[in-house]
Amino acid sequence: MVDPSAPLFLQQWIANPPPWFTVQTVSVVDETLDALDPGEQAAISLAQTLPADLLIIDERLGRQIASDRGIPIIGTLGILDDAASQGFVELSDAIARLQQTNFRISRRIIQALLESRE
Image (cartoon, rainbow, N blue to C red; front, side):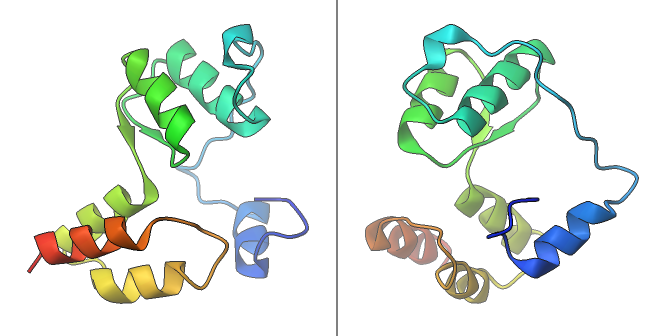
């Protein structure tokens, strides 16, 4: 969120986050997670330490490892689907906006999600 390449609105949001948002440092990263990037390693390690109710993770290998460890997971599309079910967003619009970012996912997955809601 603080990366210079992150969208400006995200950088501004994280500079003054809401009171419910907590940043927690990961003190020990599980060494068996070397196949993942540092962010995913930290997220899974923290989810195991807390333990977390739900881990937001999109990368396929990270999702598989988290699931294998019994960590409940959801991805970005799952969050958007839940938000649409509760009337917070219009799913096709949210997905269209997401596709204009660096988020990558199979068109087949997106199409299946949209068709499941029809």
